[in-house]
Image (cartoon, rainbow, N blue to C red):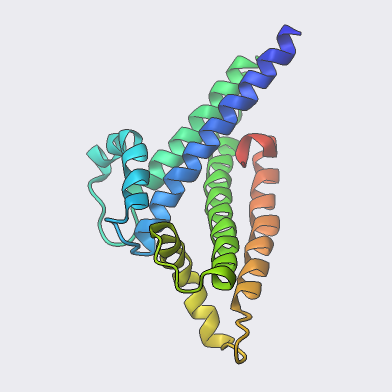
Length: 197
């Protein structure tokens, strides 16, 4: 019974860490897509993640350009430390360093792909029910997905009222997730449950 409670507790902690990693990668993507920084939802994400990101901004410096290295580093270190802690708690000992590094990269990639996946679903639903929505959440989703949708739309223009680009992006997300992230998780030799949400 105690062992089951302990493993349930570990899984809960792992899930909470993955949710925080999800928020860190959302912050990274909002910066990369140049989404509205003053949107209330952007501000919430920044406030929630700043305590951890602030630690890394001290030596990596403030954001320069579109890619926020401090946020990426924060997500990577958080995930690697959490995997080490879980390994230590369950009594397996220190995992191999190479496996940890690969697992950290896989976790970041997994979180980024999940964000795009959910944002695409929200974007598609909004395009059906509220194509001209001005809610801060709707605007943020549109700003987030536009950088990955625009190049696809150039190759596959809309056919009248039908835009096929979301289907292509969905397929690409799933391919990268199954092939690249799957390969990274296998190479890391660490349970996929510890890496992804």
